[in-house]
Length: 354
Image (cartoon, rainbow, N blue to C red; front, side):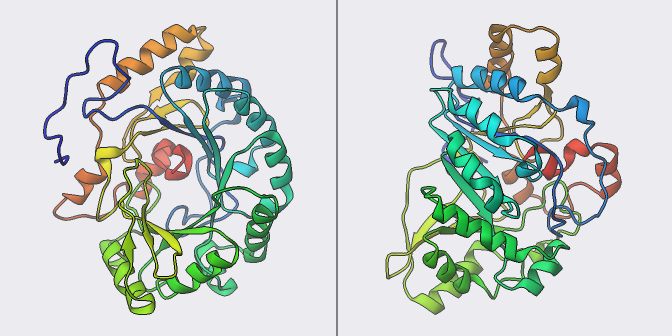
């Protein structure tokens, strides 16, 4: 059950747009492509996938129009994701369009970093506020085993470019897998310190695409803190009142790092995020099995008011808390089997912008 919110609450007319548990519509993750140039075994372990038809992808103008509607309803934070978003051609053009929206307080990008060194300057000039890059290991041979690609040097170059370009609040995301890269936590923190970036460790999640997931492979938040305490001494939680997914901690020397523990310590009670796929399906939860088709409405001539009314009614009825329900599962296995993923590519995390 949701702590401090055992039953859905009524939303009074005229109040801020909130769901049945009082969670606001504040953060929108926009996938611009379902394609990726890596094959990480915790997300996209297969070489070939059923890709979304290109003609069904939202144009930049359509994304900007939907962003206008969402921000009119309270969304302040927009994050561009994929797949790998830098595979979408002319992405700085979209960034420029979104940066012109005065209601967007935080315009961010999540990338695996492979292409960032060559595109970072254009994205910064277009108005991108922040960037988060993935770095699961400091070892090139381990990177190749994890991703199926030999592009570790490009990722490090991308991180260096982000620092050189002066992106504030630079973050590095690490998915920690037991027996794979769980011996690198301290090394990654030290690397992050060197490049002035905050490292965030992520528990291995059993969302769509994680077809090799098992609970035994999850290196938990508790295990991370135990290992890092042995290395650094007392670790202090910051206890921030925030809807951000990461719980942040401070080492004795002041270095701050984060842990996203969606698998063992879900934060559904504060989740203000929803996701828009590259072809215009809106998902209220990363674990949701179905989305709402906004592209059909948009291309059918719906007005901004009609779109806003539809989005509002759906969000007000929202009761999603997928991570909590999964955590409560007695016999927890793979969420979606590979055959089902092939039949419905929207169930893939790389399609809905994890």
